Image 1 (cartoon, rainbow, N blue to C red):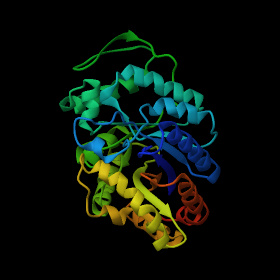
Image 2: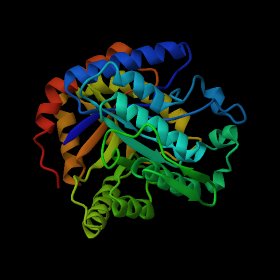
Image 3: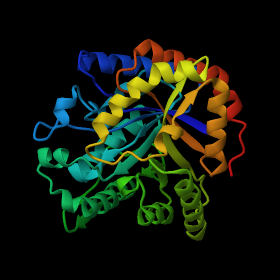
Length: 338
């Protein structure tokens, strides 16, 4: 089992944007030093002043350009892979995305994991002037163009949403044939998206899926992956809030109020499901190992741990990461994946 650290970069009231970026970079440094396999950024835009979201205080996420921020991370790390979970493809011109991703792959010396998704917050589409109803078509066409740009000496494209005259992309990514592509199923779980990922050899990123959805989804993904004849390693990845304390009670006392900030901000855009609280990797080191064993049993082999969320203090985030790296990760790496 592999372990990454996921950063939404929430900014509650009372904290500056610059402070969130500074703390995130310090947490990235810690992840590198502590032996985590990867760090993951995500893309969000704006505060929604047309609905009630802005009344909740602060910003849901302030990483508007994960590819640009990834370049900063690449210059202060040497080992961890730099993942995108995800780039919202429908919001941007795909050639620009292909160029920026290539730059990150170069400056990181081939450590980019390129994540792509549809996006799900309506006000972000409104802010960019992109019709949200077109996002699935734009996503598929954009990803096709990005991969074509990376792998073709010269290419052109004539599609529904984009027209690209004959061009050759410069610079080109370091990784061949191209950086690994990761996709996030629409609205957090979608069988058609799982099949699409497997057929193309794309890795999959999941967030809010129940244990039974994970079990059946893993079987579906693996069957489609094998049917397509892929030989490279297949990741089956989930993202989970995490906090490791000396005891279960200590972990929940510190972290549960902070995670509720996240839920207040996400409830207007997606329903919170009953299983989610039990899915948190919260507790003592022993409890966290048991929770990871439950994920391994349903086929998860890569976990993106969400240590920094809501109002959680920077020092508490680092202590939790330290406990995970020292007391949880060595045992969890031994887990057999079902």
